Length: 323
Image (cartoon, rainbow, N blue to C red; front, side, top):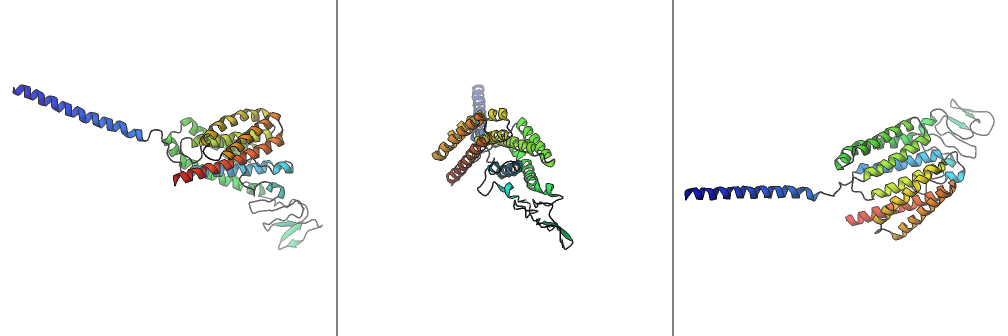
């Protein structure tokens, strides 16, 4: 009898231990499920990097178009606002070093030299005035000064990437994607350091593509597909301006491919802007097919402007939902 009772007690103890073990296991299995499918919120450095990439593309594009006809100078690869565009035609150096105009009365504001169309030169406080430079550009060190904004944006991008990398890896960024971003950033640094204009633009656009991949591992106010569409449009336009039509035509179908996904995600925003963007993308694709550079530049700027408007709507919509 006692032996039977001991057996029963033993069985009860085993059953209780098993139940506790199953309960603990069940709790352990349930905990990770709360974070499955959820991406971490995008750090502030991610938005900062996007801003600096936009600045970099804008500045490089202005330099690239300085030798183009006036009409083409006024068409922006990456339109950011009405105040931009056409500045190369006025001959203004934004580094605060020199200003020149097409009226040939260029003045160097760095306190070094002034030139007019009058013959001869006048001494002013140990400096000289002359007529040899009608563009009004200050000589000596000017080339390095012209790239100050590019260097500044590049430095900020490096700083942002250093801050973002650990979080991106923790969020699921692959080793290949991380290496591609780092390699492209290093190449861009070399190109800007050597002031290789076209190579710098190509590297910046490729880095923008890598940035689009980076945004996929975070929760952002604007879908990652937005940056993919933007990259493909800019790359197509840039290749068209170089009359590299084979490369431009390779980007054309990718624009539409990414746009299909973006428009589906943005269908709850502004239908008018979505339709407008859709038509402008189709117009751009047709322009690329016709191999008309000026037409590609015009249609491309319109598509980029519409895309910028859509970005504003998406950001505003997300902000309102969060309130």
